[in-house]
Image (cartoon, rainbow, N blue to C red):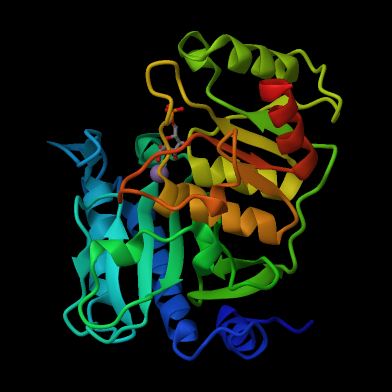
Length: 326
Ligand code: F6P
Ligand code: MN
């Protein structure tokens, strides 16, 4: 059996999908982040790296030790990469310009450790990344980062679970790779992923029901009581977006994080959570909206902008729309 490596795929992407030079190096660094973080997560319990630091981040969330480590790893890995101009991370209030990146043509948006609430319970976590091409020259500015997801050059995620997987698209098919830990190499295990239609699960934090408007409550109830026209759906919720999205991508169905009456923008962030996953989902034949419009069409007004998220099989996302609006 031929085993294709991730590095081979990077070069194929570069050749086939109009990705310009340097993208394969950037993706290679993402894979290094994934391998380093997988190792950190595995040994966190032995070396006192579980739990909180006692500080909060720009989003007012309690910061865990591994959140800090993950962000530091991303910064270290991209530090000396001239094709990368800057990084926007969930863990940093402002954009971070890379010392050698003044002429860099790419920008990275990243959620270094998504679902870090699962750290202490050996649950799934992930790293979400989006790679944009810079539209200006000279030092990158905040405005360079405020691009709609339709401009993404490549996007994907690393999933840390019982195995470590890297799933991404560089504008072509969505491919999934699994890390062979014994040799530190990702191999292609899930070529050309297509999200199934008419099956799978629905995934939403139903404990928030009291915070939703009546329309959203009724819509989710339709899924819970298995009365959707798109078919019966089981309930699944890992509490880590990457884990919940990965299951949805492979098995079908929908992941939802609705807006709330007092917080209509919801919880999840556009630039480094929703847009990269929407890119992957669309490339796999699915859909992603904020309940009103396509996620990829939204141009962010600010770095840490939030939007509601409905993402998954096309039929399910369309049904959510009709339940919310018709
Ligand atoms: O990054 C935000 C996040 O941790 C996601 O990974 C996850 O899906 C979501 O928040 C869980 O939020 P809640 O605890 O409100 O369901
Ligand atoms: Mn996250």
